[in-house]
Image 1 (cartoon, rainbow, N blue to C red):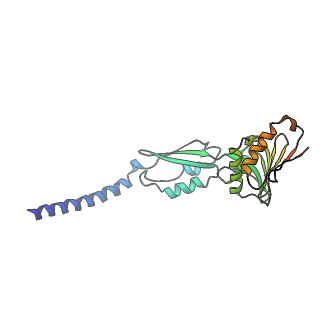
Image 2 (cartoon, rainbow, N blue to C red):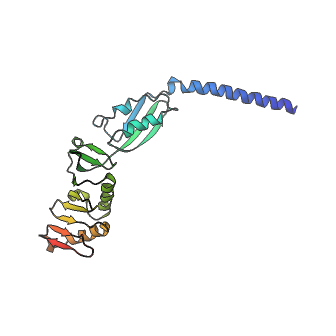
Image 3 (cartoon, rainbow, N blue to C red):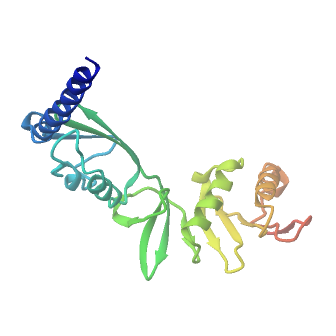
Length: 221
């Protein structure tokens, strides 16, 4: 009796694998679940060249070629981050965060926009008033310095130009034409201290504030 039950269990198990495999094969080729539409949100498809993403042939919604999708999205320099959601039975929703335009820089003799995603963008993409970055900082060096500015009391939109030196030091020129010479280290503390100094009405005629030497501030008119 026990042997008969064991044989039945084996037979049922075999049939389950057999029909399960057949059903899965048909399921993957089912036209009902074929991706027929890719909807993109958060960025203008017409202006930012997302047709390559919208025209992807990703086949069945259950068996998406994620590598192909990721490759196409990552190839667009305007994209900071994205999330993909499946809307059954046949639609993909892609929510995109556009990169922030941070500044203009001369790279290999051409002017580019530096994006917050660490990529160089065509300068024609934006007419925003952006600070020009002089020198040759790496992308990581610039983004790290930009973060320090954001964490300070200074507003990035008040910065006219940024100057990077081989010593890894930065100068900041504001739109009121005041030039701030920063030290190599302790940048955070220096920025906050310089912000306090600029609030002093007695410094109205000062055009250069030199904070390169530790515990010493030099003013030049």
